[in-house]
Image (cartoon, rainbow, N blue to C red):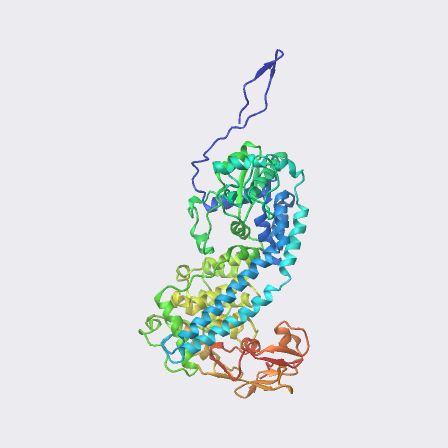
Length: 640
């Protein structure tokens, strides 16, 4: 920054206003590293002279969030300085149009219908191909179709419920109120003055912003102003109006930096040509498909500077999620909504793929479908692992651990959600191979305890162990599994625990018959001994668990049949006089108290949790889609 030459007027010197001179790279900027970018944005957000502006796309994204995630964002905003967050009038106008069109719920409805159609079409195609040769063993086609129905049907039903949820309207209402509280003042007509000429120049010269929206012009324009020929309107200049509002306000408050929050990634705002340069391995592991570091278009940076609006930075939901997660606060819901947006990649290693097929084949064998899948010699038999190293004493919290691993386990056990999530993400196969057996067992135990307490990161960790077990070394997966499943059955003093009915136990039991964890399953089965109150003990001798539903048809044969009993080996797993309300089926399945019509499959899932039954071993005498009438006080019978 420097002063212009001093001029003389009426014999005296007149000092002209200071003229700011741009310095530093602009067109020749190098890609910014993700850590540098996040550190910079965190520093800027904390600066009282930084002002943040929402565009319509980010507001729409906030409206789609669940209430918990949106509350976490508002909490972060309040902590860093709520008064510096603004909504330009044009962004509010765009949001209002989407509210009238009911865009939020319509977009999800479109995706749900697409999934439903794809699921139905795939089933139709698979039904045609169904045969014993489909997966290479007897009844494999029929078994797969049954598994497909059992998996997809509940998802379809839940999505139908979700489509009718009041959450969407509530989210739009809350964001609408949020907008009103942060709306910029000032007449809009000043911002849109001469917009036609400015838009034409920018679009013809490919000058940001808005040149990517040139296709949105509603009809042929003329040089003189007039009504647009299309009734639907024309938003080709929307970004330009938004940008003018931001610059005007930022200059008026003498902002040092402008941050635009946007869910778009168009290259009339972003410099996207750098691709994924600057991304660290940590970010790549955290996010399945990371976007480039948000670098603003150089001409936007220069225009903000020339208009006295300060420096310019951009942030999108993904990087906002990383930013909040790194603060160490409780932003797990917001971070998950912003970052965990893609399904994990399917198993690619040949050994892992064969393992999935063998699990399926083993299930067919257990269900009476004949021999297990043929193929190469079991690769897991070749792995060297000392089963004697799985010692029950390692399940005690007082077990001595190495200093480094003890600190990681303590952090997982005691930290908040964000820190625990970060700790789990650093534990890949390579890192865990350096751990000793006792530490790995302790890791499994702590993961189970925190998952039972409702921690989503711990449940994700156990689910990854189940889904990707073949990709972990035996020296890693067997001790972790021993610690996690052992913690289901034993307390910290190695006494038998009563069943907790947790989803984490279901996840672990779905792997218990797999060859990848045969040593740990056998060791736990031996430690449990001939426990009379267990319907199933882990170990090599897996047997079918035949569950019988005793029902009485309704008098008119139209209403749901009455459920009288659910039995396993002649023992009733349910009671009609459950005095503890949390153990009643209505409470467990989120239904109002009283007589209820419930699905057999849902009842079966509850029983698998509380009686620790591997779902893959259960055989029933009834269609699990059937609806039955359940008595008012019916629930899980634990005293068996």
